[in-house]
Length: 219
Image 1 (cartoon, rainbow, N blue to C red):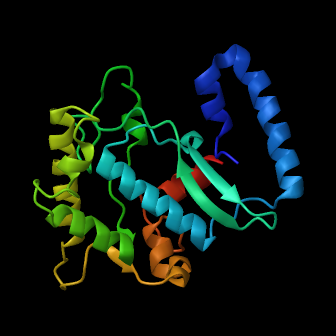
Image 2 (tube, helix red, strand yellow):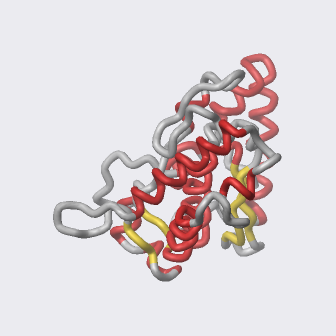
């Protein structure tokens, strides 16, 4: 099931084709939900998967991650099995940081989709990102070695810059000494009140830039 709003359908296909495409989408969505229950935005696997995707996009500088570019795999009972990002050709921009998008050829309107770094992260993912950032360029597992020959040198350098920015963010603390980015230690914590607030879906949420909130608002 792809998360895609009717407004995105019209944006993709225009006014003339948008109506027919929208009708088809509503029909398919209705048939799907007759078999599989509506998507539960409290699902811990969904929350974890969307969060990991947002961190990955901030690392890769993927500026085109609107809800229509997210696949959600679900079991027959409606529970989420996995989350996958598609259409990744707007990644590795040489001017995009981990927190701010920069337009690149043919993608001038995608800056609105780039949400930057979340304020919550899975403990294992945090360890992996910090470990990757700590590797010297000469290491065979470094960003530079892994990307060599696949993208340009400028793109590799900017990817390193985004990774360094992420590492700094993950080690940042507030005035009380608490981490700015909350670490989720176990799967059940994804449904906690604090995490829900940080994802923009809790009772005390202010404006939060998260993929979960963006998908909930646009589905």
